View 1: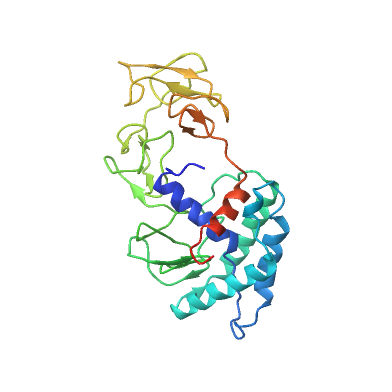
View 2: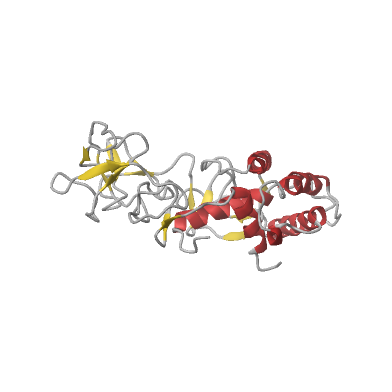
Amino acid sequence: MDRHRTQWNVDMRSALALAFLAVLAPSCTDRARPDSEMGSRLAEHVCSIQANCGCDEELIIPDCDMRVVREFLAMERRALDAGLELDETCFEKNLEFIDSLAGCGRPPPDPGSSCPAYTAHAEVGEACKIYDFVPWVTECRAGLYCIQDTCHDLVNPHLLYEGEICSETQGAHPSGDLGECAEGLDCDSTATRTCVPSHDWPPVPTGAVCTALNCVDESYCRTEDPEGPSEEIPGICTSRTSEGQPCSHPLECTTRCTDGVCETLPPLLCEELEAWWAREWL
């Protein structure tokens, strides 16, 4: 598993990891009971799918129902001690997300599909702290995400203007957590990482010369210029390379080019189980 992911991937994995366990009881009158109704409901969703996708045996949670309920209740108590409040809408969204992992694929990122289950009242742009990821316990108000100590709205992102940084790393797509370029601007994520004026580039078929990232048919503009294609140094629209095959260009893989090979990504369910075991308290 690639240990050098971008901060966006780390944050989004954290968001997915929290979704795996982030559903909390609407009533906390008997939090010490080990078989709380909502804790048991969470365990039912998690434990019934954990063996679906052929994940490594050491990732399977033993005594799953008991352990999920126990950690659920422990996180619930921590959230309440911090003075945070339950977001019941998030409860349902996270159950739906867990169910989507049963197909053993990798659902496309959806900022609205997982969310912090315990929140406070900090608004967009205000400072925040994450207390825990299981569930995500944050000082941001419901619907916001605490990323790099600041509250962000990933569903209704902050607008960025010409010259503002729009991606934390260089790549085919912006990292996504800084906001979106305003109308008439595009994020030049492959070079300057800033919002630049949009161009009405005509689509270029695979095999043809390209001077921008406007290739069609899921191909990419391959150029040796690290700044990306241009009129002076054009590229060729080239078919992407599939998982497990050799690669030499950062944009060529359908996944990621890691150590000269297009990374083979495990089912997202396996990554969620790995995130469970990565927690220090286990």
